[in-house]
Amino acid sequence: MKIIEPVAIFHSPFSSKFGIPRQSGLVDELTGRIVLEPKFRDPNALRGLSDFDYLWLIWGFSANEPKENQSINTQHSTLHTPHSTINSPFHPTVRPPRLGGNERIGVFASRSPFRPNGLGLSSVKLIDIEKTDIIVGGADLMDGTPIYDIKPYLPYVDAHTEARGGFTDQRQWQKLDVVIPHSIRQRLADKQASELSNVLSLDPRPHYQNDPNRIYGMPFGGHDVRFKVEGNILTIVEII
Image 1 (cartoon, rainbow, N blue to C red):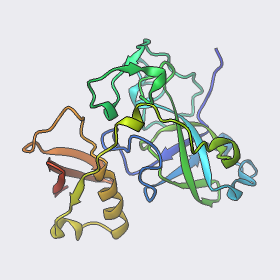
Image 2: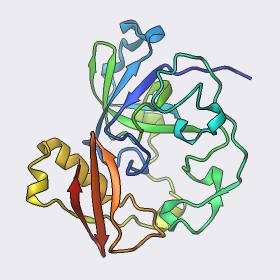
Image 3: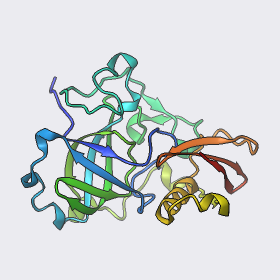
Image 4: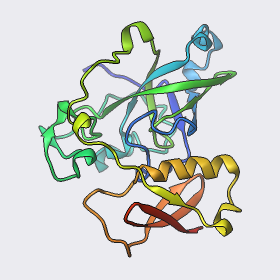
């Protein structure tokens, strides 16, 4: 088996999986930082990268790994130890949130994180390069995620504007209206409030849950954000 190792670690406001946008590019202003591992921290490796607007990130769903593997690859480790991608038991079908979390579809016809090799693929906007750190927008990665490769997005071959989108063409995502009370908004910087509002508008709840009295909690940018949803209105009730 080919042994692979992370070339970088991703840093974002999300310290858990709950609340992360389900696809990259859904919240463009959501910024993250790609920090190259010491072995790859050579400015020459990024030569010419600033000429591109978007990047492909190949990364690992490390938070999904079995407990026996967490000693070599945890979501918050520095991940200096080379390792292969983890082969989990094969499940041929998954239940995408877009289908309400109850309807099954083939794993290879989905973007589910529960995949045979636990690899993710995201297209992100290149915002800036600070020495050997890469600042990107629109990522759907958790803080501490290992990145296995970075490649430029090429519009002339990567963009297929007339392509069919399978079940996503038939099931449109219903965004929520987000209410942040003034007393809570005062505790957030304008950029953070905007990012949080756009993240929550995507409705991070499991789609089989619809209890208007239930209080949900989500870590975001060092805060514990608590909210409830009634109809199409999401209201933040507390930030700790």
